Image (cartoon, rainbow, N blue to C red; front, side, top):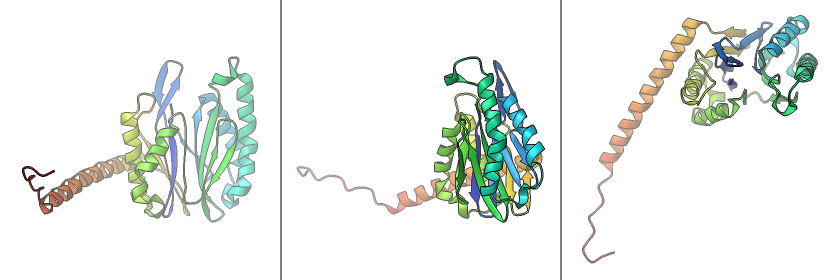
Length: 246
């Protein structure tokens, strides 16, 4: 099970991913976010071997020069690399096509030609360019990602600064990992895409974001308790009913 999400915010895009990989009956953790040139982050959900082939092909054909291309031009270049590998993976599978474990989906986030963007290629090779203030998710945990988006709606992420948006998205991902039945795991990988380029956060930076995430949760709980207590003091208790009245 995998979950990779990308959320637009004020100043750029935040990308987050869980770290669990499953191969047969074996589970292990590995970073799922990768860099494509200086201005693009990407991740995949699905077969590890297919991802390795895609990574090689992307670096071979698009490892440089993508920073000057708009997403509308990059769309065709990315599909020209990804779709043939997807078709090859489908052809390699010897079992039922309905349960092909070699299928993979891909999520790209970049800031090229002066514009931020999110781009998704699904399991069947179909692609979507998301608007600059949008959100996208891939993986077998994809539905959890959209629940996370709903849980953050009141923060208005498109108008939230990059650093705070990173903390909020981390917090939502952590809640998902703690409550999902299986298949998602810590640590959470984070990446930021801005006009200055790509930044994949290191271990110490993610630990700081985790501390900030926990602190926000404590503050929210305290505010809610205080507001509720204040409201309770202001509202008088209901009058007791008069005997004989309805």
